[in-house]
Amino acid sequence: MYKDLSLLLSLQSWTETPLLHWISIFASKYLILFFAVIIAFLGFGKHRKKNRVYAYTAAWAALLALGSSLVIGFLMRRPRPFTLPSVITRIEPPLTQYSLPSSHSAIAFAIASSLALANPWLGAIGFLLAILIAFARVAVGVHFPTDVLAGAALGIASSLFVHWYRLYFLPKSMRKKK
Image (cartoon, rainbow, N blue to C red; front, side, top):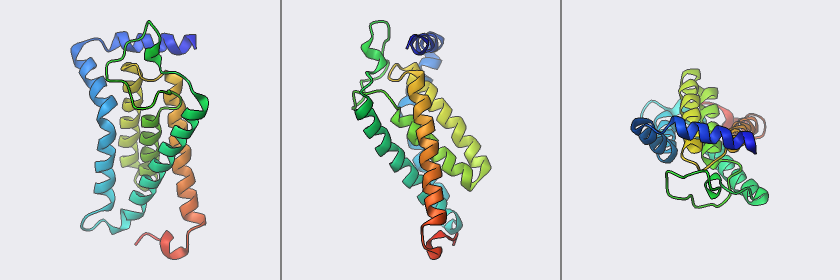
């Protein structure tokens, strides 16, 4: 807990400049929506039929990661960092009161790893954005570093599970890239 708190406080002090402060708030609150745009671009629209399977996989992985993170958070009941006296929150308090694991990180890493399975370049961009989201969630004071690491692991595991399920349990007609 001490290492978690010291990393959080050092990241908050590093992002005190106005530009980094604004970037951390923007990335923490809104960058997750960019992933929805990437999925829509990947799977829907003209000439995108072959990638539609990967868009569905990313969407299902994100939903699995979100549901799993909410259940685990309810079971673990770890309080958020801004409840401690030395930590400030830079955004309004989140809807859920529990911190472990980070749902934003779980969703972002689930989508990033699904994108990596579809296209390595898109996956690299996805992982960079997911890492930025994870750092921002710590910088604004709503998660400890271990919360975002647990969210990242959960997101990647969710993506791999959905990909594995699609490859081995769906009927062949639904597995193919069309």
